[in-house]
Amino acid sequence: MNRPKEQPLEKSRSRNKLQPFEGHVRLRAFPDQSKVVTIEAESLEDAIQKLFADGYMVISVKGKGETHDHPHSILNSMSTQITGKKSGLSSWTHSLFQSVSTRELIFFAIQLSTLLKAGVPLLRGLEIVQKGIVNEYFKGIIAQLRKRISEGGTFSQALRSQGKVFPWVWINLVEVGESTGKLPDCLEEVVHYQESAARIANKVTTAFFYPGVLTCAVVAAMIFLLVFIVPKFTAIFASQKMTLPALTQIVVSISNVVRNQAWAVLVFIFASVGLIAHLRKQPKIRIGIDMIALGAPIFGTILVQVAVVRFSRSLGTMLRSGVQILQALEISGRLLENKFLELGIRQVATAIKGGQGLGSQLEARKLFPVFMTQLISVGEESGQLEKFLSLLANYYEEQVDTFLARLTVLLEPLLLIFMGGVIGTVVVSMFLPIIQLSTSGGGG
Image (cartoon, rainbow, N blue to C red; front, side):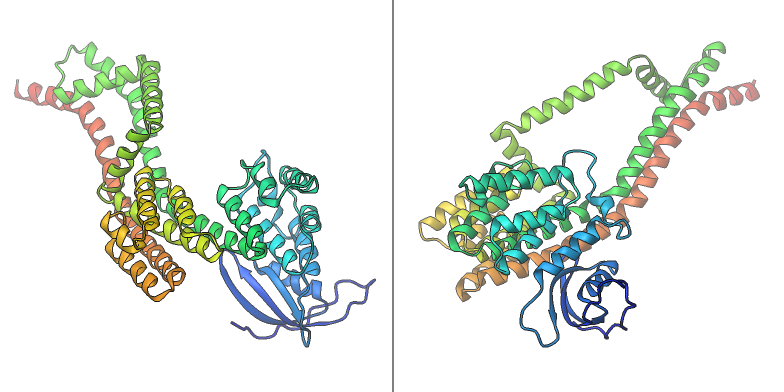
């Protein structure tokens, strides 16, 4: 995809006279769109800085008439942009706590892959990437990686020693890349998978953000009414020695519990959460809970679709990276974070080891929709399983988008009605005795 040539940029450096740059730049518009643009600028660095200002990530640059990219210049400019105050990117790389964000991991993999493809040794590549990182904690992690490798360890072993920072899927893919001699390609696959996983997580989080805010508002309003408003009405009712309707008595009782026994309520809530967390650690109970969750109305559908996207994307990534089918199935099953599906995929792997087909075994165990299993069977028959897995991941990701959009539209009015109903019930229950008193007084 090309765009019109940019007008030459004004000269930004008067001391160093740089050669004008004219050529092609391959970009990544985060998270995963990739394209090539043609641009003219005062210098190579000016061209890259302008593209950074437009929100692009530069992957490679090739000048007009040149046959090789400029990976070193790219990374130096990238480091300048990330650490510069004007770029605005330091806000998300700065870490107040000892943590590394998903986006930082993605940038790390892209930069290291670019260097390795350019023929830069691994240790030197890690050193270059480390200099361009703002997050001091991440810098220390990379320094430990370099130390581990310089002492004779492999890159995958170094990553495994930092398992709290690097997902274990990274470790498996890097290990495969080392054994096959395709480490840069495996790092690119890591980037694609990480971007896809982050994209799905962001979509789910965004879809449930507004309903979550409304739910918190309902809880806050209820607590305010029960703690501050209901007691005032209760005092009036007691002074008048009024006989309260059943609904009012229920609300008053709840108010008394919340005000006088809040600690007991909190203990009960925390105990319940702790018990559920403990039960989920039991393998058999966890399998049962996850199976019930997949069959739940409305939310079960989204869980199945997200599982299909994760499974298809991760399995395709593993197979393209050279991972054997049985190992790829084991890793993909763990990535689903659903013990019922993970157990089923292990059974499928056992059947495949005995000579059975992947699509037919998935369909026999009814782990995923028939449409998915049929396409996998077609991919196996045509020898293009990776291609069909990618098609499935894209298709079901669109299905997730559509479902979440509809669910959000449906949940908003339902939650508003629920909020009005709950608060209205409390208000009505407080005025019922007054209405009864007025009615009986008027009748007398």
